[in-house]
Image 1 (cartoon, rainbow, N blue to C red):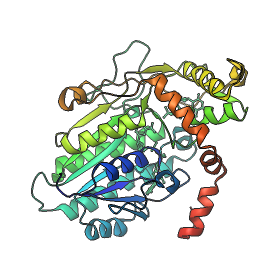
Image 2 (image 1 turned 90 degrees about the horizontal axis):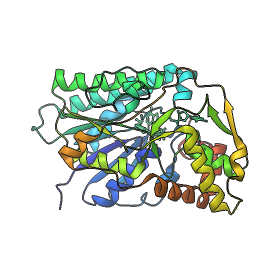
Image 3 (image 1 turned 30 degrees about the vertical axis):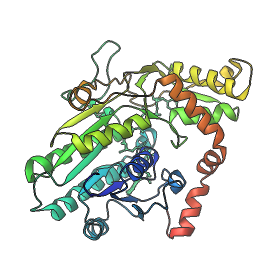
Length: 356
Ligand code: NAD
Ligand code: TYD
């Protein structure tokens, strides 16, 4: 039996956040889990249907940048741990609207830090924790042969998204170093798995293969990403939240580097197989399009610190994890249709009021 904890998870109705909420609600029945999410286009309560009635779970719709709301949640729920995932998370959107990314990712994080600092002032050492969930993109891009990112790699973000995440990481460390806020940070590589919004490469391609639409490959498809199953990420967050050292950063990654074009070809093979189509018949959908501005060539994560200190390593192999993911999207066609059509956004606007 674990000690009772009261944990605020932000961004819990998004892709990774929903997996973290599900894991904590199921594994730690004695905890109280509060999920704060604004339900932007990326957040869907349908992602948490299977746990929404659990007695140790509650949902609050709101903005992490609303300090009065955050203060009241911390007070009323006696929050002693925060796992912060809420963010604007898509690089292409950040290129179109960098100010939104600064507001949510930088000012939103700062608001949570400030509210936690006020609320936890004078609390006994070791009984509070602010876990900031970040990305490997803060380190910038690697050349083909460079060593993978480690925790001491210099920050060198290139996109408005990664710049906003880097700024938020710096504020988290500043609150630790200046005010003694008990923090941990994790920087993870690209995730895949169920419930990912179909603007990101893998669910977008699965959706488009199924519906015979073009598969847009930016540039020459030579860019490399290090893919990790979202449940492995949620497990790593669980380990670091509970056992990571105060003030430390931990890299999380799959040791699983793939060129985009190879990921898309693998998806074509898997989806064609699942749909009973002739092998490779969907390859004709591959369409090379104009490259993303400032497109980082390669990300790769060295996760040895997390492995050596906390014993974590990924459990899913890429091919079987991806096949399961393909099967999940095929079995949850309605989820995909509703998410892609904006049906959920309209539903929440009616349920909870206000514009999104
Ligand atoms: P996502 O876009 O799927 O979900 C983000 C969630 O945050 C949504 O539910 C959205 O409604 C919510 N949100 C946005 N603005 C908000 C606000 N102002 N107040 C409250 N809630 C708000 O993102 P994701 O892919 O699940 O990523 C979660 C976190 O993990 C992010 O911090 C991201 O930077 C980080 N991360 C993601 C990846 C990845 O591959 N997806 C990899 C490493 C790190
Ligand atoms: P994405 O899933 O957007 O994640 P990130 O930009 O955070 O790495 O993109 C993964 C890779 O796939 C990235 O190199 C950009 C590329 N990409 C495409 O080639 N076509 C697409 O339509 C998308 C969305 C991404």
